[in-house]
Image (cartoon, rainbow, N blue to C red; front, side, top):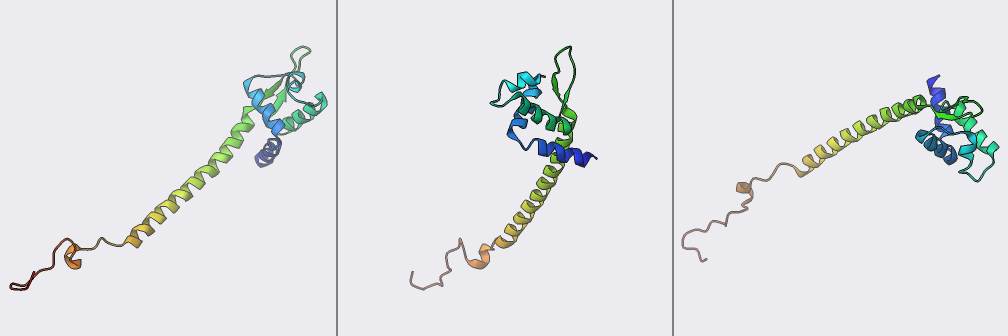
Length: 133
């Protein structure tokens, strides 16, 4: 059941207007009319967006006298965050293992440091006595 709710929440947040509504409700509760003031759409269109958010469990409505304020429901956002965080951690672990493997391969490619005594580096060639310099 949580997967279905998670899917509905991601679908609901796929629309930029609904994401904006969620952002506004994160600051404070608002009525449909208050939310609709910020959009170039009808009150009915905003109500439809809210219905999608309600069905996803992201928003709820209560009654305050004549006013019916909309509330953000953080529980579903927590569910989404947990799901994203789990896969983010897995991806970071994979990238960490890949980085370590690439570092090992680079070390193997470089090979051991050459022994200067064997290559003659840093030592002038020996000259025999009496040889022209």
